[in-house]
Image (cartoon, rainbow over all chains, first blue to last red; front, side, top):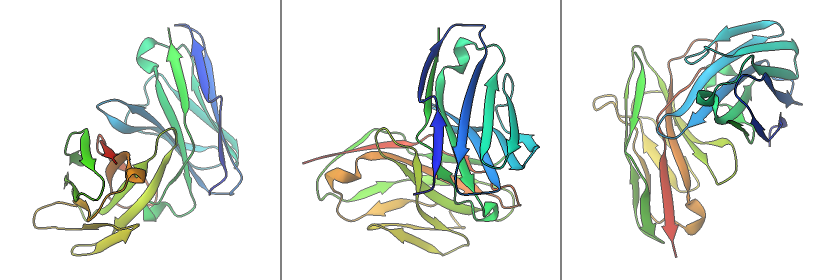
Length: 113
Length: 113
């Protein structure tokens, strides 16, 4: 199994508060992704990274920012959480992006009250 | 834009029944196609893939054939087991270096003994 750790695994917060989710990998993979999973929507890409300090937006990036200062860590930040950001967030990694074969973490469940 | 459409669930089958989960896609270019599976409480994992027309992907008794003429990639298994209970996602990648996947909404399968 790919070494991917997401933290926290569960978080409950209030509207307007900042939240940071962390994805940590031990595989030295170049590419990292943040997806959100919502009923009736499947998985949707928020942001991705193709190297240290190299990131780009995905389909649903509004309200989210990311940072990658080290190969192993990819942080997802909600500057001011809203109830619409209640979701399960998955990090994924790969070292062969052209294959489409991603390895997923176990997810972080975020509830915004 | 590119998209994936899966049959809606949930699907409930008895053990040893035949399984089909339909998946069709819309894409410009020549996508690679994937089935990912999510077991309860876990992240997604790659089940099988096909990279060009008429390719058949297979794994763990599951099969899917890339049909360009019908833009389909239906998942099949001849005899399901209780342990196959999970959510199944069809996905496509239109290539390029970033590895971004477009997912269907997922189909939940429950297999009863």
